[in-house]
Amino acid sequence: MIGILDSGVGGLSVLREIHTLLPGHSLTYIGDSAWCPYGTKSYSEIQSRVFMLSDWLLAQGAEMIVVACNSATIAAIRTLRNRYDIPFIGMEPGVKPAAEITRSKTIGVLATGASLSGEKFRQLVETHTPGLKVITQPCPRFVQLVEAGTLSGPDVTDAILEYTHDMVQAGADTLILGCTHYSFLKNTIAETLPDHIRLIDTGPAVARRVSGHHPSKDADPQIHLHTTGPVSELKRLLPLLCPTLTASCHPFPLS
Image (cartoon, rainbow, N blue to C red; front, top):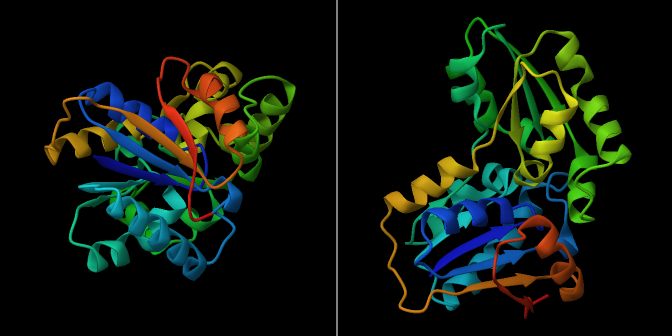
């Protein structure tokens, strides 16, 4: 079984990509919606929470765990890999692919405050963007909108225009979606911004990394979703976010 954890429902965008690539594998997901967002929490708080979720996934038989949250990856991935013997796969803002395709030499990064303040992000920028202009923007309303199941409409459009204004004005032609929640707004972002602006979403790349570890197939693959928030809310959001996904929804037992 492949374990997946996130601060809320955003990581379902990664689960969707993993399931598409590896349909013969069982997936167990935990969305920590009762404690969302992670992007405003301290690193020590995020680490404690992620350790608890990881311990539970291991007890369920996870052979690898995907930390489908950029903030949790920044705060905890190194410690997780040192603490546990199974593979941990984290999220990484698509700075390198964005640098490779930009023509205007200006890149925008939409992410959480925790991700943008991390040493890992600073290193990515230093390594892959010499000579380029990188404009960053925390987007807390994006997480709130996705957690509410609001993927389009005036509130979403207003948030997109607010968060991307400076980037577009500066000539950015490539924007990085640096949070798994933002993937669910990708279509609306693309429709709102000028046609020449390209969006970088790292979910498919993470699915390929999972596949590269050659996880065990299951005779009867199943998808189980757990939430620390109300199960009724997860059941409401699932058909909005992943309409083709068949999964069971459960309360997280330690919440």
